[in-house]
Length: 417
Image 1 (cartoon, rainbow, N blue to C red):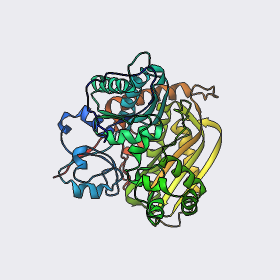
Image 2: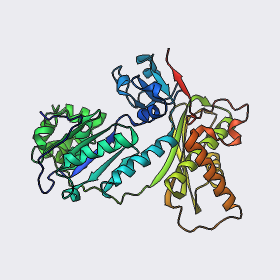
Image 3: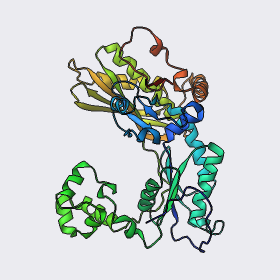
Image 4: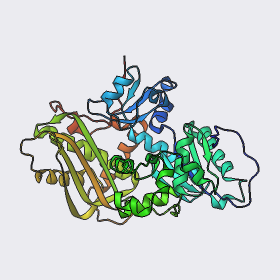
């Protein structure tokens, strides 16, 4: 058994860290950020996600999870399971703001950070052995700083490899830390369900069950040829390595954002052309805000469309120059929409993405009104950071007579009865 520690101090380290990798994962991050701004939510079951009939859960508090609510669950099901919960629409701008402050804390410990999302990252702390007596001491210090400076809980896994550290942080939740000592990885791994391995989805799990594989230890005992014959050579080699605790990947500090995108599933299928256009305006507005916050422009624009019959298509175009503003993005997206063969079908989902990213600091040809556009964008971002993403909207979205468009970025809240 491995002891999950919720706090306290650790004594008795060694000169060099045998387990130099930390996986820091914020606990129910969206929920906890909402609680920062609304103390009434503390201690209550809170579910963050799309509030419409087709919305899904983005984050659930541990109080809500006790009712069976989970991330990616349809919101209708979440309301059925937890009718007295607090249901909150996501505020991605606010989450991005707090995420930046979390990463400032992490960067105060080490520059060797590999972000995985807004609320989790790998840290290589091997260089801290002269300043901290153990990796456990680093984990405790990180958690204490995040708690004292941001009033947020975080869980930390400590291990020799990234894979084991991430699994340990999952087992340490909520609000704890767990170290898997070097040399004891297989003792920790092999009793765990095989579903815990990266890459084991529904189809792969069904294939492994056909071989009698239930635990990671069962998988490790399989002959490599048998495994690869069942799940394919690449997947078999990948799973076999993990089952034996092998993961040689270093913490990568050079990971670059390759694309930025947003999408929306609508409570009612969009039928009218005006409703589709208003939805595209809303998506382009959200996407350009994210592009500005990430510090990027992009050259390739992609439109994703899912119809009421669940048919999904995408259309892309590559532009002559990188763009980052709605005035440039919206015409390109409208052009892509014109290439979609709608054939009278209702639209269930729309998504817009930009790839081929470059830094906004990279020199670009300026338009005559570029300075005024940039100034207006800066003011909009400042207002949204302070009051929420729905505080400022394009005029097109506040015009009457556009049914069927839902803007999930608005700071709405509903309470179950």
